[in-house]
Length: 604
Image 1: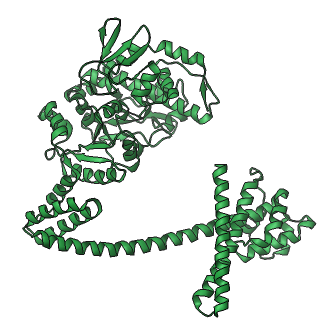
Image 2: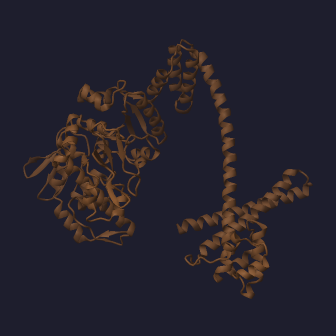
Image 3: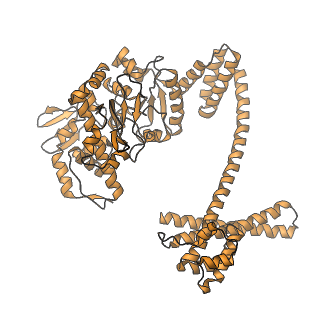
């Protein structure tokens, strides 16, 4: 495990003044010898959160949280102790001296540093240089002031083809910039991936820059958004934009608001709804849902009000339910996104929408089903009925089911009893289909298991032959077990017995001798007898391979006896003997598997 020297910890603590650090996240005012503000760790209207510059400590008299600057960062950013030190070290450009730091960690730290410098470069271009004026004016036209742009660290990628490359290549390797998706190469020329775009840096939940998303702003014909390619740091299916900044507000408000786009999140933040994240314009994934679950049990989906947004919300609802989240949905007016809604109405109206006008999942699903179908047509009623039945069957209690069957019956002018009869028939048919699906799944799993077993046996057979030829250490191990194993085919067993017979002649890996003894041996088979000098003897590998081949022999005998029993040609005494032997073989197989899995767990 990596450790940081106490000298470096003290250096970080001295540089990171607690008032300056906390002041970035909490609005502080002077109060005697200390500063005070609203506690970021619980809801309060009267400030009880105090920060002492003299003692370099914080203390909340409301919820009891207190500590030094590392403790604050740890609580606010949800980092462990070491991560909070690293966060502040990065902030104050202090290089830490990790002991026992592996190369992978070192490379990732370099990549994070490169992305941080790229973010600073883009931000400088937008807010401090003339080249960013057009992009800045565009963002201001969307009601984003410089304070907000700084808070979200928005930037601008210049039009010039390689300005970022020129800036970073002085200190970092070209291949590192390419690996991070910042730069590309054509012929012998390097060029920036992001050019003439507004840049949104994408952070992980600890505030580290993973990658970037660039948006057009001058109505050109290129794609509206381009994202960093998948890299060692960036995988957009595992990222939620703004999670790092939203975590304290998610904790305080006990919910997360899920949106579709960057501008929606930023506008909502300005409107006072700061627990917002988005999934970068892609469909929500299981990884993202599980990430949400690690921070809260409650989610509000606030997607666009158009058909695409409603469909996306419908899919997200089921995914969030699967990981055990409580979901409610904000339905915006048709063809309006949150950003547009706030501008057309007011921040207060938006806050009220997310507070008092939320649909629970059942109402939302019902509204979607009814909206998608013309209930004046019989075929559309039938389609809506099946959709409703499917949803209620999988997600609703008896009470909820009765409520919505009655509601649907009223909307299509059909009695509840008639609908209930249809629903019971649907349940019976669903049960039959589920049984068929389960049987097919069992057959598929059985076939997959057989295929995997056969692959394992084939690989183990090749290892046994190769080890016998190439490693003297393996020969006694294999010879002792040869009567207990069965290789994947008779041809390989023939090879193995011949090799054991020729061991004393020292001709095990002589190509000429092998071709003479096995006149039809193929070039692929000859590879079994070649030593890979990069691969040392591995006792665990040969022991595990022999275990697989012993199990294979026992399974083959068990299968043979099972076949004899199923054919029904045995007398009672023979049947009893076969059944006894099958049980004995299966017990031996279970013991072998348990021992093998136990060794794997211990070695893992």
